[in-house]
Amino acid sequence: MPDSAKQLAQRIKDILSQGFPGEFCSEETGGVHYLLFAKKDDKGFDVEVQISDSGITVFTMGLDSYRFDFGEVDERDILGLVDDLLSPHMRIREIHSIFGFPWRWVIEHWDGTGWIEENETGLGLFPIPLLEVSDRNSDKFYTNNVLPGRMAKTDPPPP
Image 1 (spheres, rainbow, N blue to C red):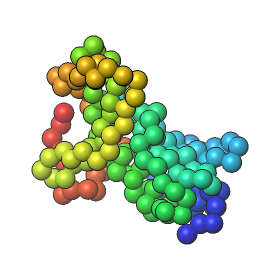
Image 2: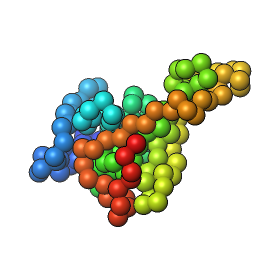
Image 3: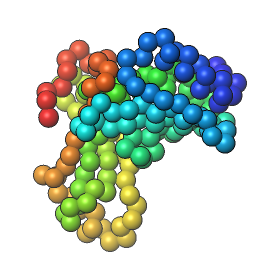
């Protein structure tokens, strides 16, 4: 287990430099190490990992989707999550309000037979519950195809 954010970030970069098939970039600013994995097309989403001595946060579509305490996970756990997020076996369902704007995002994974909700995040801007009513017919789905899926033996059907 790495002793610092810098060591963990370096170990991840070392692993990625050995043949990661997608595009990624890294930088360090103010003690925070950033790893950005680019989406392949407009049907997908970027994945960003921020590593600091206080913790690790994985962002999807600009939202903090997963948070870990430093020392709780290692480079294999983080790269496994990134691998899954960059594969067709995970997707983001963007939920729109009845007024047409996105307000909730659900990360789902494919289990071989259907989509399972894994994590949810959203905008906490609505003091009136009526404003949070969703129009399920307007949900949008974002899926990456940068890496092959590893969560199930079968791929999900196309959207």
